[in-house]
Image (cartoon, rainbow, N blue to C red):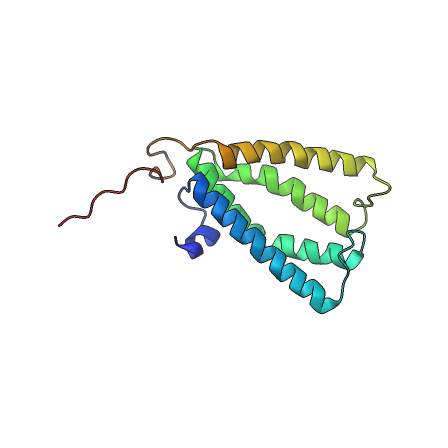
Length: 157
């Protein structure tokens, strides 16, 4: 598997197995680096801590590109345009920004914007979980490339 292409390119298609593998690897990398940075900065893991919120925001934006690349390739396998990834990434990014600036994220005093963003993210998250993680891609070639599950042709002798 070509990890450089997987996390940097928006071309082509990937199947569910590669999608889950890429997502889990990215999540582990993010968590390890984020906790290492948090430990080095001496910050608490309290979600109410402003320093914690800013570190989370920075890491979400750093890893936005590789996340989008993986999502787009999986959307292409489902024969969907890549811009559909924005439907998932936008609410998450908006929530991270509003949390970092103190507009939302107070767990004891949720406001209307908290509820709207939480329900939007939950609804879109369920849709994307099913669309990207559970449903099979388009059988055969589509406008985004060949079927990643199609049998590879035997090498010529």
